[in-house]
Amino acid sequence: MRWTNVKLIMLRELRDQFRDRRTIFMIFVLPLLLYPLLGMAFFQVSQFMRANPSKIWVLGSLDLPDEPALFENNRFAGKWFDNPARGELLQLDFATEQQLSSSATLKDVRKFAEQLLKQGEYAAVIYVPQGFVDELDRWRKESLESRANQALSDL
Image (cartoon, rainbow, N blue to C red; front, side, top):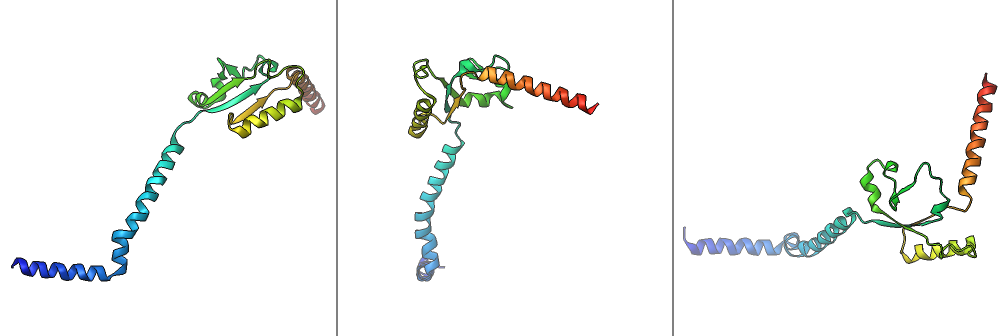
């Protein structure tokens, strides 16, 4: 076997390959389209898999009951999560007295909260209205009384 014969066979095979449009597409065009798309998809997936903390603005936390405790050390209490480390992904910012001045109406506070949400500063807002503890206690008493009355009527 001589090198001239190898060269002739190789040139004939290359000529046959370049005549086939599907082969040219697979060799040249598909990688130019596929590699950038795969790179962007990988980048999107890697960003999606990262644990980014979400900021939550808490309004009126002083009006929450002491038990059960919702917050511990400016974070949600770990007992509210199956995995307490997940609670670290929620970053809490508590409203100041200036932001919740007595002159501010509920409408003003709501408008301000909506503005912060639209700007993307916070992912969520938790609003605890004034007198929440009293209303919760009243509801608990009524609930206990209705259960007791129901139990008595069942006897």
